[in-house]
Length: 255
Image 1 (cartoon, rainbow, N blue to C red):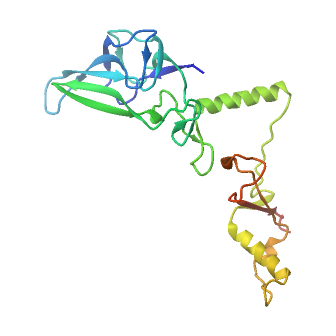
Image 2: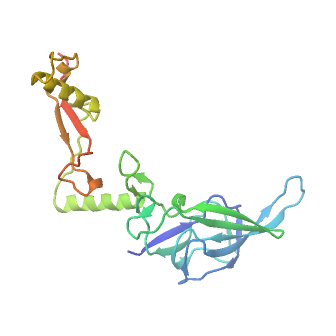
Image 3: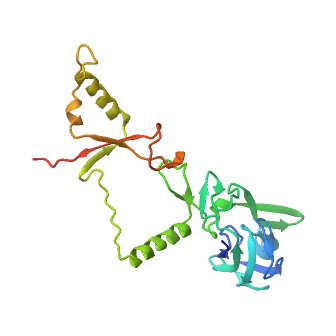
């Protein structure tokens, strides 16, 4: 779904800059790396008494269609100016998996050139990583503890939160979130606990000769173990054999 994005200038430009020439107009389609405008700036070389005028070109960090500009030719723009133009993107890439947008399938690991500076017959290229482009708020929020799962943008997370809030309000419901670990329950995924449980059962069933006993076994009283359905293997109801075991027990208050 197409959405509008306010595009601001990156912090690494040689501010203040003066807009000298438009490269694109309202309604034009642009891609990542498309030159958007030329600019000039003042630069004082080391050990030189006078400032020099240098020139650069700013390139688009995203693709879409230009809606309108907030600056004009001849304007001088300083850092933190705010949005300089509004672009309608075909996709904001708010949800990404393994370096790929989950919505449109585009590769999110590509690099683009964000600014080209020309001085005395040579070019200086300032390269901008598309993923770290703060102006478009790309996906950076990790959705699982391993960091290998989906990534979500702040904007997408806020949208989902608003939808959940609206749903609760429409249905006159409350959302209760309780963190039980280390409050009224002990919880762990340490496989050592599972090994203790297996050894204790083997000893009680007479599978070991002579019977084993461990100082850790009293701690297994009231321990409950379970597995959860594994989203990574396409099911949320039947645990996958490789899914971890969880171990919990009530946390008793000291007498």
